[in-house]
Length: 101
Image 1 (cartoon, rainbow, N blue to C red):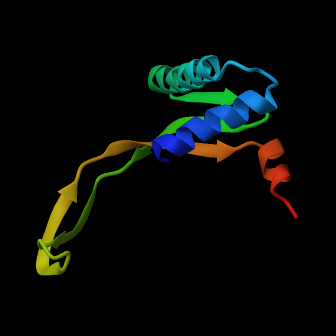
Image 2 (tube, helix red, strand yellow; image 1 turned 120 degrees about the vertical axis):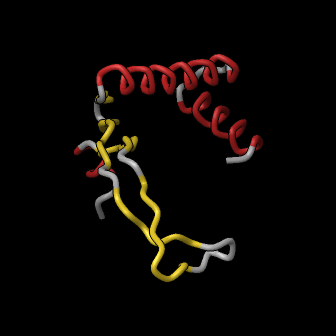
C-alpha cells in the first residue's frame, strides 16, 4: 500500500468512526499492530474479538531444489531451509460470515 493509500485508509477509518483527528487514528492503528506483534511474539497467539486470531506456526525444515540466478532449477542440487516460524492469521466466524454470499 502506497503512502497515498495509507493516508486515505486513515481518513476512511476516521470518517467511519466519526472521529475527526486522522493523526490519532494513525497512532491508534500502529499501536494496535505493535500490540498484536508483541503479544504473538510473547505468547504465540492473540485473538481479536469478532475478527480472528493471529498466531505463530512452526514450519519444519526441508530440502528444496537449488535455483540459479535466472530462477532455473539446478539439476540434482538441493538447499536446506532450516525450521522456522510463520506468522499466520485465522479468520473468526463473524469475519467469515461477513463475506458469505
